[in-house]
Image (cartoon, rainbow, N blue to C red; front, top):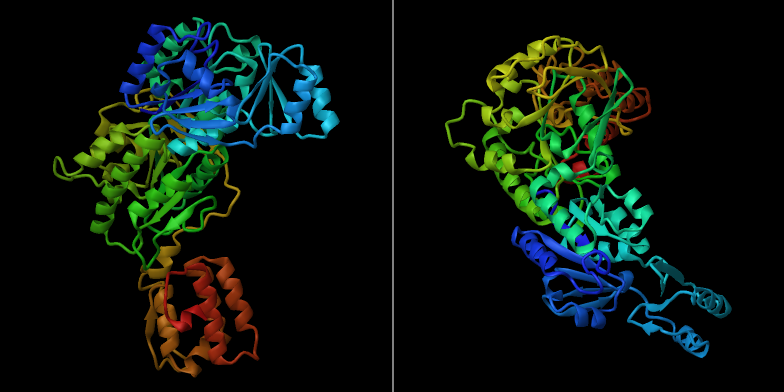
Length: 578
């Protein structure tokens, strides 16, 4: 399920003349039986609600008094989430004979035409309060208190993402809470402005309209998600039309040769997700995303990640997560991925989070050629995930065929998309489009498998600078030809460093004369620039190389510190922490 809850107004929406019709109650029970939750969002005070709605316990939460009070029917608890009405105002309104008038835990309510009297009293007393109108009702509340603020409290209580909630209402005071929901609906008897603004205009009135809506949610679910609220924009096509990833688009494959822009696109996508309030979890095997903004990184080059803690953090705080698996070998990464998928699937059932799962180097954790049943658990979890997982790879044919079968959207980089996509299409048993367009530099190909058309899209660029493969250069192997060799002026030594951690270790061992020889020759900055391809590190090293007054021990410490600042892993030694 994608939509996990229904948030509904009471009078004029669920209820007709104050009473919920039996057919509407039956639909609400079916909705709850499906595993979803129901939140009532009403302007009524609790005592009067309970008097007219004997089935009030059907709701998982009740937001009463137009957002001022939150009730948990199962526990019988109530929590005031606004300051109580000022006694001086209540006394003044009584003195002015404002009737009828009710005073709740956080609300003062009356009816038109008393709004002018109420406003004059608020001004005369110098109070900071707001007046909210709804079909003739006049409600006085503290500033910032509304059905929207109350619903957000209820969702936080239930640990639900608002993106996974459908809201329905009929009156002026329903605008605010419907704007919070991932999909909004208005019953046919709603005020005209609400009907205009809602994502769904129901054909039936009040309770019958809610029955209609519940039927649609249970039949269509994710397909109800409106593009304006759920689409993640990733670029613009050659006709100037924006291109989006949406929940109904299913799993996404991002494919292309190394260095073509896959990780840059993922970085931009995560920015779009964060901007829209969608949570993501990224599986990061090479340290590509360890500095990703709007995310918390768990795990490092030296420390394996704790998946359960990561998912708990996402559940409790709604934080975006990067799961760094550099400290694990391939077998351990595959095992961790299975745990991550199970935990993410469980969390999605509860809260809707994470909304997007990004699997970098997907061929590593879902490799082709595994025996039948080897990925039964993960594949079942992937198949049930909504909206989707994003698979990132340069070799789609190396991904398990069952994972490829779930792909509904392909984003392909490179000037030979047919060569990249032919193995994928063959494994899926589907043809490629007859005339496959070729992207230029800085473009990608968008294709929905099964359709005989594709289009070229220029992807958006991230605001933050993407940093590639920091872990690879920290603990990987740049190869024999690209290693740094500490030899000294007379070639007495031949100590290779195949990565940055090797470099720091060997740098501590070599004598001062050897160290100084390479320092004065500018060899360190050249290696950082040309092999490690870190221009910032190269500039830092070049400044150290140019300072003749720095002693060998100090120059080693400064270069080590520059490396550690960019490629840090937890370390207890005093040398590194210095």
